[in-house]
Image (cartoon, rainbow, N blue to C red):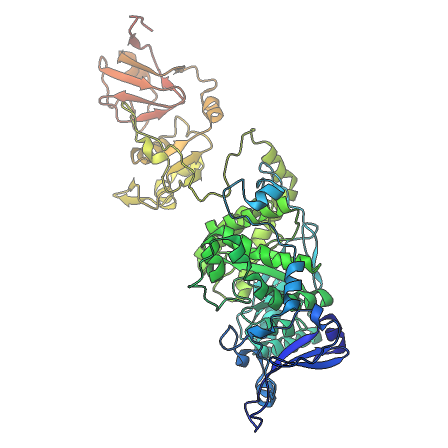
Length: 639
């Protein structure tokens, strides 16, 4: 069923052997070569019949055997199996000089393996530099445009939102209905699983059914293990996703092979060049889009044995397939570096972006965290991975992968797209980025090492437990307005505190610190009491210095300390009588005239009276003074 047009661009080669049925016991094993001019046959052994000119300059179409990767049953429809007197069962003998010429024609990227700074790629292109256009301001990475039916991927176009159907592709009507639901929800593209020829044939019916109902939303076929099926489905869909980890050698084991040198590793390239080339040429002829999508969980044994289970292995696996595409002058493809761990996923994408930058490539990126899960967990994992990369200015199409109906993926997917777009296009957002003080970004995007920082330590003389300000596993700071302090029980619950007889206690899920826009007013007894109770359990406030200064402005009854101090103070008789009357007078209730106390204060911080004074007054380093205070300092001065 090969057309003349197809044969002009790609002669086909098949191994002929005795049919399973019949009495042709003497049937020799031969090589059948079909070109646009006709067909010729060559014996595997003995005399060779000359073949048509041109066939030797093209690679043979390699069909995997049962002992290889894809069984015949997976590649053929039932009716094709029934009528097959000639089996598509190429053996290793088919690999001849034509294969070598194609392999030599591929312009491979230099190896990135070796001592950093001295690898062949480092020597040819220089060291890795930036992975983002700008580390201090979100600027979208400039890419070429990749066409996929009516939509386009690239920096000149909006972020493409896509999802994946969960129906059996062989269920044509069910898949059509689900794709329509996704299109109505707002998705730009839907991916379907294709595992064999039956699914490839179903894709033709699905595409036809969608067109008849007025839906031109493009389809992407998710391919694994079956190069021939990928060739067939290219007639039906606008985009094909191939996984370099299993497109050709996913089921082949390399347990007995140790790749000690680049040369050993490169020898295997001939195998997948031959299998991948026909698909690339067909996609080029039909203007189909392609995604070279590496998955951290399905790296080939060949890559694992050479690069290990690393982001570098993911990137190099994709670059090899991209080299084949580029050598065949096919550029209508995008990359993806998916992993279920957002940290691995982010590092792999950044490494790929940095490699493309130094290689001079500008292919778009498809972002996604694979198998993110469901509910809040799935949404958070996707937000962490996809959101971090969008904040780098990376990404041209996104998919939030949830174990839910595909329509449910649209809300988080669309929200991430909106946030990512605003990061580099909203004037207020950009103004905020530009207002950040200058700093040096010293991160190593190739390192998995967690950034180390110094946590607060308790110092001798501290009146509060400052160790609770930050948490070694990540700190949670909650923004709280002063008015919220007047509803203590509601506030305790919102902060995740446990309560016993109405008093808050810090738990593993409790907020670490409060972000207060301003201190509670001095006359807000309830608010200040709530704040003190939180501070007693190491839930401390962080308040802008300007807000503290504003709270003190115009207060003639406040004495401001401009440096840390400690004084022994005699409480005068005026204090107990001239303070304003209120429910709980913090001085009059606990101190009598003439009592000696120690006053400790820090500039801009907390003030505490001891030993019998329970309350603490937040007043920006000032002490309320309703009368004179006798002060006995080192110099003997009196105020």
